[in-house]
Length: 92
Image (cartoon, rainbow, N blue to C red; front, side, top):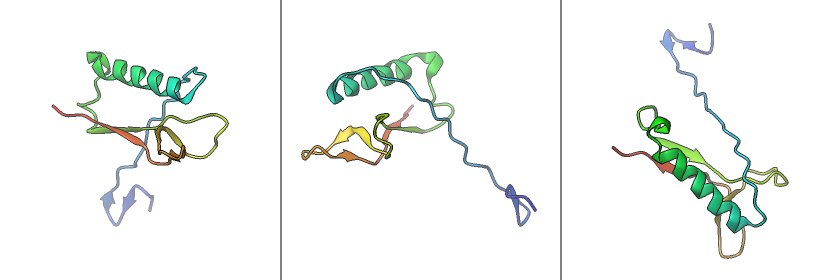
């Protein structure tokens, strides 16, 4: 019996598309702004619309020197990065 056929039921495998877009920036603020611009461009072009494929997209702004799952888009008042992903929810 395979993983995709457990007790006669077909199981859809949870694949994910990970896209790594380099964001050249000198500061966290600059990287945050560039990330927002990139996401905005991806969401407004009709050819890139994902709403017919999925209801939401999770993403984070990482750093090559930080091997943890830090999200530099969400920094608290003490300067600590969140480990939660940011979400874009598509609405019709």
